[in-house]
Length: 434
Ligand code: C2O
Ligand code: CU
Ligand code: CU
Image 1 (tube, rainbow, N blue to C red):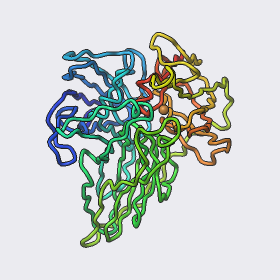
Image 2: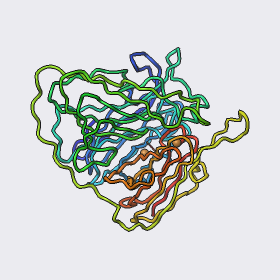
Image 3: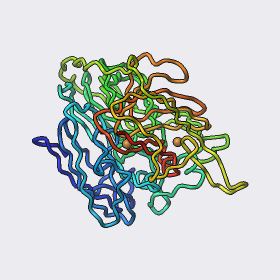
Image 4: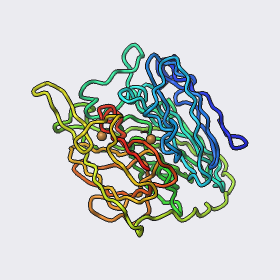
């Protein structure tokens, strides 16, 4: 679905339906009958109107992940609950300077986000480039994982899986298992990759082919970065150019140790394994030569900016309830989410520096809505390049320092762990900028 004359009006209907996933007929959740849901294509300056018709038997809502849009007037998910059978109309106005790139949408009804996303509710949003980048073709690759029961339902998470973050047995690309992608030698493909998994990290490789990374999240680099491996935490996106040469290459996700197996939190998802995601076959006569990749605008750098406030967010997990009690706590600064409390008050039009500290044995990918974060320090070491992301991984027993410019929009929003089981367990805080 593509905007015309500065406007895209879309209807999204989440419902339980029979769909084909991983080649099987299953009962899953979907937007408009497809998994993933329709791709929404907009431009900076556009108005995106979405009519959400909740066809589920539970409350849901809609979140436009990563879009730099106002959280006021119900623009931001969390504080809106759309009851089963109800319709809610969202309107998002993208600023004229909105960064191009890959974004996505998913439900954000606290307590059932992981279940609804795992069930199949997610889709991509593309903010088109102001100056097109020549490519032979573009593919949107929404990567998710899922587990089926024997009768073709979606498996519920066990207590252990909720604790460590559920990972599905099958990893899907646009709802398919290991699809084949065909190209001709010398072609340049644009891959828009979304990690829509509830908890799985993707450590992507495409051995034998050339990958140039344009951006992670909204953070477009000045020039495309040649990469051998790209790590996407849950919620992250990659905007990628692949210059192909003859042969067959497998897009794989290598095992990533996020601390979920072994140790106190272990047992949920087993040992991480390598997964084949898709197979790229390159054959035939050479594709046409393409123009060079245009240089991108120099990204903003907050490292030389005066910081007006510093704060720390501490991510912790613990067990309560004694032997076999199984009460998990997932906290930020010692507290679980409470929608009626404001955890962080920031001054509008200021730059803050946040130290993100993880005291647990699991990684936690922190996501802040509305305002992107510049990563300035990882594990105590300064970051050399300019990296803007809206999901930043905070490694087990590690720390990351970010800077955020609270500008353009004031209002109330949230930050949370994007392991959605952790978010549902309360690893989320409310932020108010005014
Ligand atoms: Cu992708 Cu608050 O979420
Ligand atoms: Cu978000
Ligand atoms: Cu977490």
